[in-house]
Length: 220
Image (tube, rainbow, N blue to C red; front, side):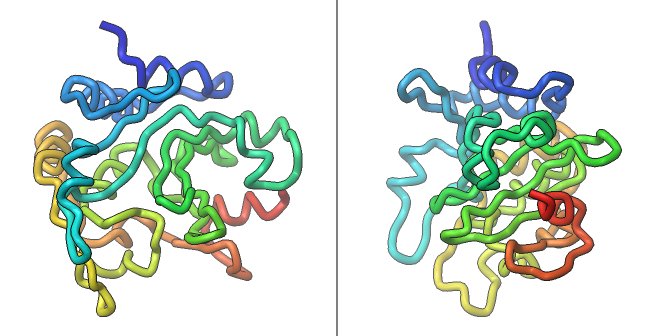
């Protein structure tokens, strides 16, 4: 049976960019476990049953670990994020594949200056301003998601384990099924904090950063 999440993403990826094998395995896991919903011809994938996550939510807590939505965003809206109109370099080196925050932040594949594929964050600007490399490879991205933050768009949480920020007032219970899948499938450990994966969590209004993606987007 065809995997629609994979097929839709393949259709919007720039020529020469390939889906990392770990993302192919993730999308296979999502569809095999019916962790998706179809709206207006587009399939959206989730790490936890969408209805169960919503039903569990109270004012102080919810189930489900990290809330993220996978979809084939491609390059269609890059011109709006960069406010520079159509740009060939952007369209060849970036491909949006997930929404990371309820305020519109997104994650994308990015080909760096060496042609290596990284996973980056593109903050919405209306909420999160995080704009940096999230993970140097797809496996580290899965390990980041498995930590269990509410959303991965809020870098102020990254120095702490989930729910342990001094100002935390909302508890997100871990997605143990997904955590077990990551550790057993890839024989890896889950980090305690995001800073073990995200090396330079740069934001839009930063003046300087060591982050490669932050520095690349300055020319746009």
